[in-house]
Amino acid sequence: MIGRKYERDYAEKLQGRIQRTMEFTGNSKPVISVLVTTYGIERNEYSNRFQKVVTMEELFL
Image: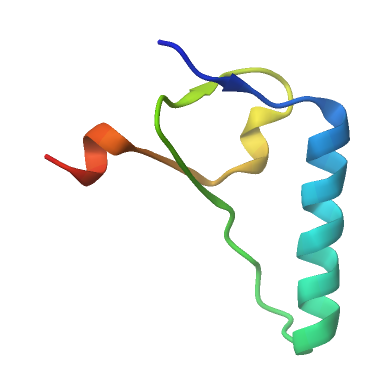
């Protein structure tokens, strides 16, 4: 599968955004990370930051 590879710098940026969102909203419930992408995601040590990955194929069945 062709996909985008997520590296450490983006994983840290994403974690920071999640943390700021939780602080801003005052919400103690978890934030769910969903990635909507054309081709999917290349699995690596940082790709597990997304709880769900949705591809175009899944959207247009």
